[in-house]
Length: 130
Image (cartoon, one colour):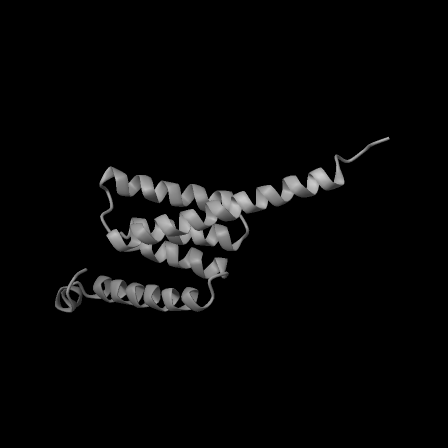
């Protein structure tokens, strides 16, 4: 990231970038304490995207989907993030590790949800219409 001196030399644009970084840090703290806040995750994704942090942006988008209950959408976003890492376009090892772990969690959750639905369907039987 640019140095403070370089940002000051950019005038208003540099100040805006610093504000954006501070906003990202505040949002990151917020979602750490409130992981089910889809709006905060969405805003964090936008802020990371504006800073060129594509991998972090995609993960935030995935977390926003998960917070809304869209596990499939979250999994799709995390797989997109993995593809970005594999392509060499992103090389943040720590973020990639977080993405891998979160993807495993959500895939496990989806399998669990699917098994519960199958079990419920088997117990209740198909709906009968007359």
